[in-house]
Amino acid sequence: MEYSRPRTHWFFKYKLYHIPFWFLYNYLWWAVSINGPLEAAWAIFFTPFAAKFAFYVIFETLAVYFNLYFLIPKYLEKSRFAVYITYLIITILCTASIIVCGYYLGAFLSGKSLADMYGKESCSFYHLFIGSPLSSTVASITLGMSIKLAKNWLQTQRRQQLLEKEKLETELNFLKYQFNPHFLFNTINSIFFLIHKNPDKASASLAKFSDLLRYQLYECNDTQIRLSQEITYMENTIELEKLRQNDNVEVTLEVEQLNTGHLGIAPFILMTFVENAFKHVSKHTNQPNWIRINLQLDQQELSFFISNSSTDSKSGDLIHYGGIGLKNVQRRLDLIYPGQYNLDIQNNNNSFEVKLQLHLSELVTQKI
Image 1 (cartoon, one colour):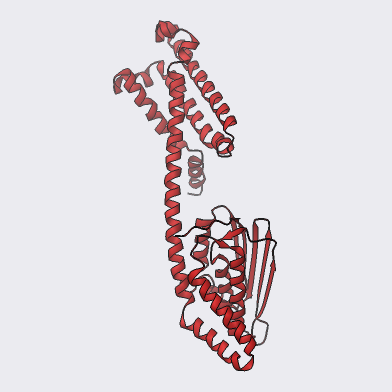
Image 2 (image 1 turned 180 degrees about the vertical axis):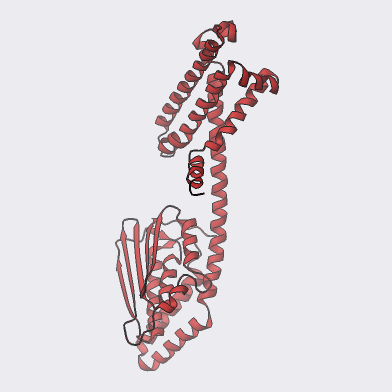
C-alpha cells in the first residue's frame, strides 16, 4: 500500500492514461481507410503494418503533448505568436518525417520495397510525407488543442460560477455574523457611556461606527475594493473593538504602505483574521493580553501578519467561529487568488499567529 500511491501519482502526472485514447483514435482512422475494423485490427497486430501504426501513435502523441505543455505555455500564452507558429510548424514537419520512417521500417520488416508495400505512387519519401503523415499530424495536434481549449473553457466557467456563489454566500454569512445583537449593543453601549465621559471621543467613535455599517451595506458589493478601503475599515473596526475590550487588551497596529490607490483586494479578506483575533484573544488578569497586527506592501506583494495571546482552553476553537471561519476565508483565497497567496497559521501554546502573503492586482470593479 505504501508504494502504490507514488506509482499512481507518476502514472497520472505524465498523462499515461491518455495513451489508450490516441491508440483508439488512430485505430478508428485505420478502420475507416481499410474499410473494416477487423481488417484494421489484423493489420495492426499481425502484419508489418504494425510498425507504421506504432509510429503514428507514439510520435503524434508526443507532438500533441509537446505542443500543449511546452509550446503553448511558453510562447502562445505569452503572446509570442511568431515564435510559437515557427516552432509548431517545425514540430509538425519533424513528426511527419519521423512517421515516414515507420513506412520504411514496415517495408524492411516485410522484405518488400516501398512500391510493393504501399503502391507505386508512394515510392518516395516526398510522396509519403505529403500524404497521411502530414495531414494526420496536423489533425491530431488540432484535435488535442480543441480538447484542451474546451476543457479550459469549462473549468473557467465552473470556477466563475463557484466564485459568484461563494461570494454571495460568504457575504451573507459574514453580515449575519457581524450584525448580531452582541456586537451592535456592546458597541452602542460603549459609545453611550463615552458621551458623558468624553463627548469628543464618543462623537468620533460614532462616526467610525457609522462608516463601518455603511461600508458593510453599500461599499463592498464589488468583487474587488481598494486596498486603502479595506485598511480604513480595519482601522475603524479596531478602534471600536478597543472600546468593547475596556483597555484589557493591548492592540498594536503597524501599517507600512506606499501607494495603494491602484491596487484592489477582495472584501473582508483581512478583516476575517482581525475579528478572529479579537474574538479569541486571551482574558488574563495576571498577564498581558495583546493583539499585534503588521501590514506591509512591496509593489504588488502584500504581507499581512496578525497574532494574539491565547489560552490553552481556547486553542481547539480558533479555527471555527460564527458563520464564517478561517477555513472559509482560505476557501475564498483558493477561488479568488489561486496560486497567488501563501497562508501560514500557527497555533502555539499561548499565542495564535496568521501570516498571509498575497499578490494583488490592479483594481477592477465589477458588480455582481
